[in-house]
Amino acid sequence: MLLVKSKQVLLRPWPTFQLLKYSTLPKKAAGPFTSNKLIGPSTKDHADEIRRTLVYIGPFAETMKRYKMTASVFGLCGIVAVPALLSSGQVPVLSAALAGISAVSPALFVHFYTHGYVTKLVVYDDIKTVEKERKRSRDMKDKFIGIETISFWGRFKEETNWLSQLRYKSTPKGLTWQQKTGAKHVFTLEREIMEADPYLKALSDRVQKSEA
Image 1 (tube, rainbow, N blue to C red):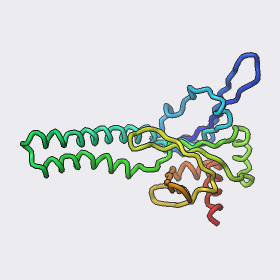
Image 2 (tube, helix red, strand yellow):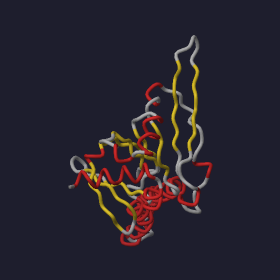
Image 3 (cartoon, helix red, strand yellow):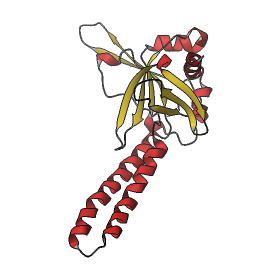
Image 4 (tube, rainbow, N blue to C red):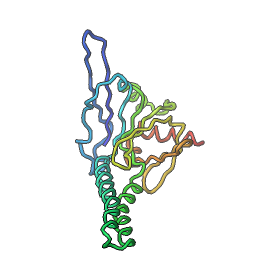
C-alpha cells in the first residue's frame, strides 16, 4: 500500500502541526497482505521532517521484522548453548557444534532472503513538489532519498542516497537498486507497487536513465 505523508509548520505564537495524508495508489496494487495498521500518523514532530515525504511502504515490513528478530534470538540462544553443552562433558564436540549450526542456520537463511528489503522510501521534498512531479513525471530531476531497511537483529535503519548514485536491476525477486560506490548495498522494492504509481515509476525510470 502506498502513502504519501507530509508535515508543515506554520509560524504562529505557538507551534501548530498539520498532518496531511494522501493515497495515490489503489489498495489492490500493494497486494492482499498490506495492513492499514502499518500506515499511521507519525508520533514525532521534528523540524527536520518538514521536507520529508513518505512515498512507499513495503507491504511485508512488519512481518519480516518479526521473522528476523525471532530467528536472531533463537540463533543467539543456540550459540550460547554450545559452551554449556561442551562444559558438561556428556556431549560429543561434533554434536555440540552441529547443534549450534542448526540454531544459527534459520537466522542466516532469513537474513539472506530478506536482505535489502525496503520497508520505507522517503523523498526529501515537500508534498507540493511530490504531487506536482507525480502529475508531470517527465520534469523530475535527481532526488535525495532515504531508504529504510531491516538490520540482522530486526531493527529499522535508513540510508540516504541520490538517485544518480544507484544502479537499476530487474530480478525475479523484485525491482532492485544497488549503490554504485561505497558499501554497494542492495535495496529490493515491490515491482507491482513501483510500477502502479506514476511518481514511484518516475523514480525508478530516473535510476534507469542514470545508467545510460
